[in-house]
Length: 173
Image (cartoon, rainbow, N blue to C red; front, side, top):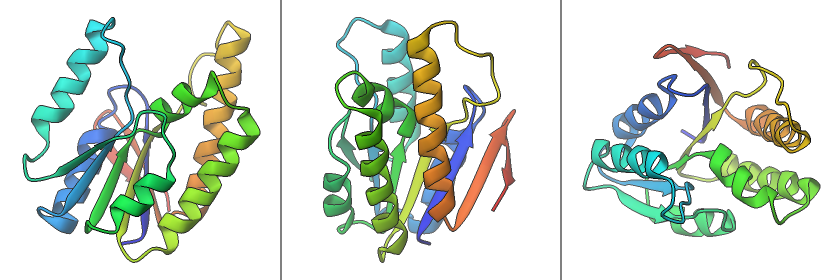
């Protein structure tokens, strides 16, 4: 399988599509890597996390990475047929506040090159942010630009790339 990259906007169906890909490829040997972090003060994010948990198989493993190092995903991933990381967007947002943009891009490049050449399958989910409104704040534009760079790096090494729009996945690569 190698690396599959799934992009889409908010509520585009990208996570469900990625979960279905993982289930088809591995039945039960799936490691779900969760990157959403919540300090308990965002009820809407709590609801989204709960929906994701309830939707996936109870047989799947879970690694709560937050903004942690992606190397731990590679290490843990050796024990699973497929690793599904959802999402690159949340990982980048969490790292942005305390790490230089260039270092974040370097870390992702290292991760995706190793994931793409590994023996197991990796599915990486991210938001497509280049099609929307230009953010009003400098920080918002910086994040959009960072995620755009990360998405380009992931797509360049992925064996398959999908864009989900209105629940419809379209194969780009």
